[in-house]
Length: 214
Image 1 (spheres, rainbow, N blue to C red):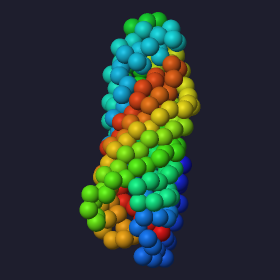
Image 2 (cartoon, rainbow, N blue to C red; image 1 turned 180 degrees about the horizontal axis):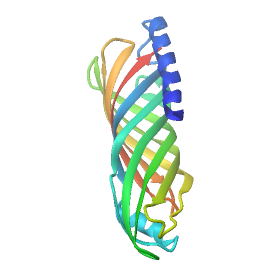
Image 3 (cartoon, rainbow, N blue to C red; image 1 turned 30 degrees about the vertical axis):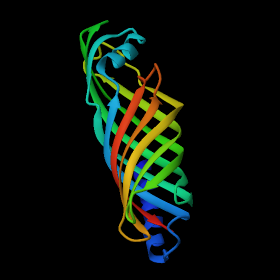
Image 4 (cartoon, rainbow, N blue to C red; image 1 turned 120 degrees about the vertical axis):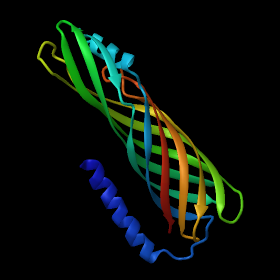
């Protein structure tokens, strides 16, 4: 709900901005965008087995490492080739199942959730009047939450939360529909999500987005 509220507020500002956006110089000024795509959690069942082992539980875990992500970003173009950008992304929810053998036979079920705030520098190389290629690099503040429950009560799995700092690396291409409206395709990697208590790994995201220059 928090993610939807944040994205809803940004979407409202985005829509209002569309009504007042003028033919501002394309090489300088503010912009904002919304993204949706697919997350790939680079965390496997053995990583979660390690988490449960720290709790005294022997397990064999499988995890669905894919889900839909939602994101938003706001940036400022200093010139045609360089911008500074802040962003937020909810990576989604990744469900897992574990067969526990000790201290008792049990089935553990739960999910792994994560989101991130980021600040990055964006370098753009125009191809022609509409198409551009770009790359970004920056720092992130990530949060991960592991939730787990026992099916039989033979084990007592504990949930955990973790926050940390990582890196953001990305590449993409954009297309200008007008001087103000653009679309984009982007691939990013967020590093160091989670810790030893939740499971730690990188997350790759593949998104499509739309944005508005003010």
